[in-house]
Length: 205
Image 1 (tube, rainbow, N blue to C red):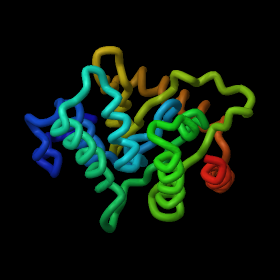
Image 2 (tube, rainbow, N blue to C red):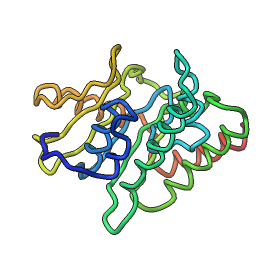
Image 3 (cartoon, rainbow, N blue to C red):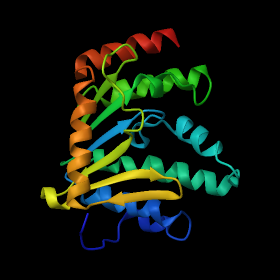
């Protein structure tokens, strides 16, 4: 997203975390909307602290405790976009795979599902689920963050790449990702059906 550089809360992590972490925080600060597609992991903005710690602790080589704690704290701080008088509208489409994989133990998995339900109960967060038994979903590689700019030309897509995080803002590529978003969303349950699905799943964990 082509915006003027801003010094925000994320600056306290400069020289502590990789630059891509700070870039994502700044992107979220300027975005007027957020749409995520998650297939393997629960989106970062919806993760509990325990879940986030388990994800970062699985990295190879293993992170030192200080580095691990900083990444978890930064991920939790990013939820500031949901706070205040004008929270950023956020919509996530999550595949059932991400909801079922036990990143931590059984208790952590249940707490993660309950946290998603709490966040999506009201306010700016909407969650939709793509269940295993839906027909016509071949989007296993569809994971993305879509940050909406003040005008469509300033939209930005963030994707994990083999050698780091890729920020995409070329118009031709954005058109492709917008189409992909619509395809994934068309396979998802509606928000209330999704909440019911997650509630049932939390009782089975």
